[in-house]
Amino acid sequence: MSEFQPQARADASLEGDTLVVRLGGDWRIAGRHPNWEDAARDPKTRAVILRADQLGAWDSSLALYLQAARIWSEQIGAKISFEGLPDAVVKLADLLAKKSPPTAKPAGLPDLFTALGGATVKLWGEIKDLAQLVGECVYSGGRFFRGQAQFRWRDCFDEMQQCGAMALPIVGLISFLVGITLAYTGSIVVRQYGGDIWIADMVGLAVVREMGPMMAAIVLAGRTGAAYAATLGNMKANEEIDALSTLGVSPIDFLVMPRIVALFCMMPFLALYSDGLGLLGGMAIAAAPPLNIPANLYWSETQTIVDLSDVSTGLIKAASYGLLIGVAGCLRGLQAERSAAGVGQAATAAVVTGILLIIVADAIFAVVFNILGW
Image 1 (tube, rainbow, N blue to C red):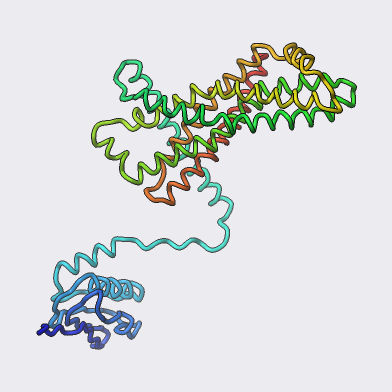
Image 2: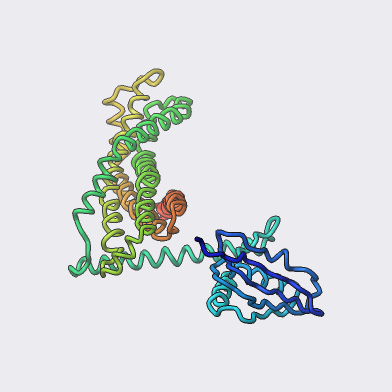
């Protein structure tokens, strides 16, 4: 025979300006139990007393009932007290009270000063996180040269293959198409002055100094930077990074530095590869009608305008872009929330941050190289 289980009850009565609620029976989250809305009566109540009356077994459903009573009492300004209830259920209700409910988003657009202040605080936080990561990477580099870093070259070589050799097809295709686009656009201008051969000068300088490193960097920002953020974000969600820290392994040495070094080493080679494909695209368009420039003449003209300083300028930019992409991807991965949605958001933010840093760095390089006369 099954033992009789009294149903949960909450008998409410008004005694003057005091609402007394007698709680009894077995309170089970899976069973039927009263709601506080049934007991809440006169909003002019000055005091609320919840009293145990033959209370049986209970679980979190009773704590939720107490929490609902407390919220209602605070709304009407009534004093609430508990009599005869188990200390454990009161403590559980206190824990529920400490968890603040989610704040509702303000309706409408924020005012200008509020939006500007929020954006400034957010930007300052991003700058601090970026500076902290850069500082930790510099400190890790110092440990590496002292032979104290937990750096594995095998991981670095694997990342070099992924961000270098595996990226050749997409980098080559985009660079070739960019060279074609530059040649077509430039031919519209130079043919007006009868200087068809100058198309080689324009394409050569644009590709070697700007578009080659830029296209390779943007491709890797979307391909490799997002992959870094997703990998580190997933490891953070699975608490693998916390496990490494617990074991005394530095996540910067073990996870971040191999990726940054791989991008720093491979970006100059990808930039050279991108330069070659871009020049080849321009040469293909110059050889076709209506320009009809022979390949040997096009190449000779390119050699007269492109010198070693132009090539070194592109390589310096490419190496710097590689550092920025690696830092942006690893930063967003380490900042990711511990959820699947957080990993996706980190990958998206890594691409946006990487491209933004590339554009800003390119503008700075343009000013500096102009001052130096390069």
